[in-house]
Image (cartoon, rainbow, N blue to C red; front, side, top):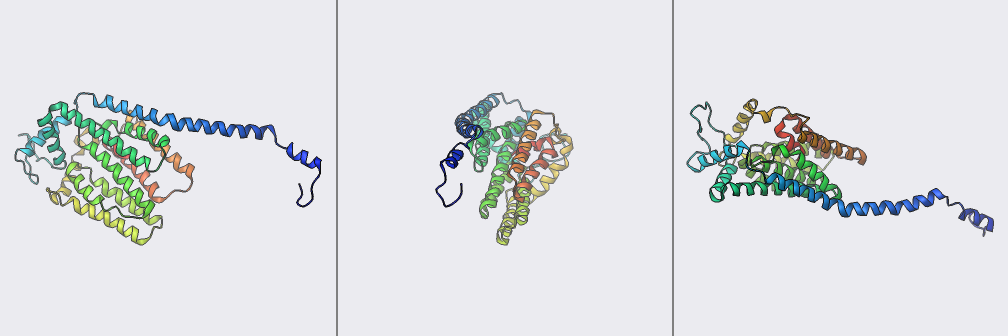
Length: 332
């Protein structure tokens, strides 16, 4: 129709009849898609939650068959009975090296739990740790996605961690990796430094020997913030948080010798199967591959991505490829 004149009835009829069947079907299809999306948002998250909880119950209901559980109980007993944190001994007359105290606090807590509540109490404690891991991963993902996305991704992430889920201190490391990554992503969003990471890493350094992962994540995130063009003050504060975390780790009761202890443990990695490269045909590795591919697809579909997110995703892949033991770290 032209602007101005009244227009003829013929032109009005031609305009009204220009609505094609295809456009009508498209209009009808939109409400149908909306209904399906509403149904998915209503029913899929509870279904995913139920699946995750059932899998956790099944896993936690198993007997404590992991030999490392009893291994840690023995060392916890030694620490409670007079072992020095800085200069511990050895529980074997055949040993050529003393024990390295990289997770002494967890071992003491595990031993006390077993003394007070027996192995049943220790099994409950193991289940509590896995529930905390589930809640931590979900909270981290939920901060950046709706439940329809967050719950399935949480399930796949926990599935990728299944090789490391037992009554061992490393479960706490998986949880803390998730917390640290979520903290740095929040810094990406608002530019605020999370100084509470410093006491968190101080505690982590007494709980499990994977605490240097926090320093690596912090360094990678700081580099990402720099490449993303964040203000200089934000980058400097971020670097300061990472440096402060490294200093805090040396202020535990073990002292600065903790740094050397981490290197000592790494030098003995060849004696342990879990430090070997991952077997990519294992179910946990396949779960990680699915998680990694979905993440990359999401980044590609979004189009515009930050360096910080991209580098953290790449770091997850590096951790997973490093050793079978660090596949759960990559998933976290």
